[in-house]
Length: 388
Image 1 (cartoon, helix red, strand yellow):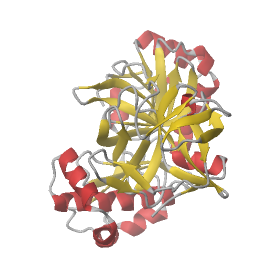
Image 2 (cartoon, helix red, strand yellow):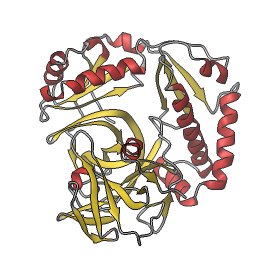
Image 3 (cartoon, one colour):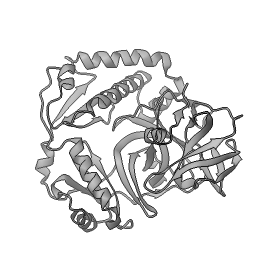
Image 4 (cartoon, helix red, strand yellow):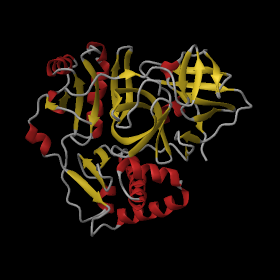
């Protein structure tokens, strides 16, 4: 993610003093965490498909062995983040760019971290994740003050222990921050990210609804009713699916903006597969919907750009679309283009979310993509994910 970061209030030195724990697969004295990663690797060898490992190797330019190592570390990072997130002192977790380290930031002491490696020295950040989320909530409450043509979105950057506001100029961001009454000491300004837009509706494992062509996300059930999730901006509730493998079907639930998600019911005779097409004759099998950490590898599927992979850059992003803000999005480097709406984002074998929009249009394979997280959708509409 190429960004120009400008401090809204704090000095650069203040941000540079952020303290973290670092867990490394190469640390000579690692014991507890290394054992967890080693066990996760053993489990993966028996369950992960060869196509997934090959795609990881190609995307990151690493060996098959290194791909298994990365997948194992990412699985442990996901579990660790889930455990730590319930503590009020937790300030974020992320995986290093090369996929060999897990970083945890803290605003206080957490016994779980001490249990993993007693040799680690501790340094603390100024703000917990809860503190940063409160700032996001405050910005969200004043989203109507942000011109979508000038201020594109905001999110928590756990690596900087700050909130980032993306805008076309420092002035636009500063005015929004001030209008929202947010402490500028806790905010960085990004002036290099382009505006995000929802993808045009065509492509993916396609279906036609209301004249629009969109992508199937993941197979789900609502009680005994079979169906799939997709993007809310594809069609409104009550719209019929008239073409594609999913037809006939009906949009039962649909929300956009604020969220970007929909549940579509299909006929009882349809077979629901726990797969995501890789557009090369192979499919990624869905095992669960465990949420991946920032820095984890992720892939997305769409007809326009096929199978694209990258890493998770940020979570909890508010995207200020021209149609209205959408909250709690995730930003990745798995680029996309018009026609990929509604498709699946998956990390390893864990379903992550529903494709929404992009910045950069995948020019020369470069650009950011956005997805709406799957788990809140499953909970909101009492859906069960179809898994292997």
